[in-house]
Image (cartoon, rainbow, N blue to C red):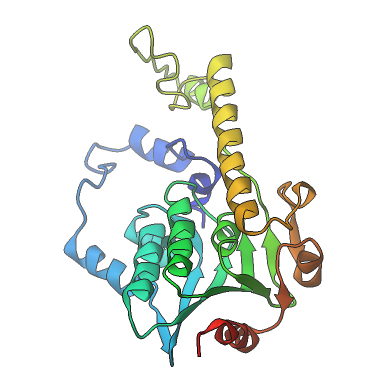
Length: 277
């Protein structure tokens, strides 16, 4: 996930060193930014989008890979990135299907970008509000944003070796000023006087103290939303289990992060116990 790693770390649209080098040492056409997507890539998105698996009167919804809002086709194809918008569409499809009486979330995700993330959790809540029970199954990773989604289910079942948690928010800003200075490049930005936060983290700039404080405040605000969302449906999850750490299997159950330990068939059985006769 080399291309995506920096996007996972921050909501600030920064540029990788490799891309920066490409721009500095190539023609404009070589470093041209994609303004529109080729129809073949659009079709590829549809092919790679997560699909519901209907098993009788329940649907299994796979939520796998790193979650991002509107990733490009290459990230989806080569880096295991999933578009959060297609996950929402999949969950809404299950909600709209009258033959689907309940949904099992099959989660194997390290998390992803906050942008577009809560909408997936809200889609789970909408399923339950419409009378369709939802059970989450942590088959592998169920971390960070993945746990936010799972937390809105009626129950969370984890496999014995599942890794669960990482409840927290992280953001990073890379300072390229020394790197550019070694290349003999200095970038100057001009903003209106009141725009003291404009361009925070832009390539070639150094964060000011007010900008650092603003980013830290946004991280704390995002964590408050995350924590409140988890505890609104899982009040048994205490603050000491929401410090960014992960738990495996039984330890996750002891921390209140999951309800039971079992495999997917067991999770399906738990889901069916919620179905109306």
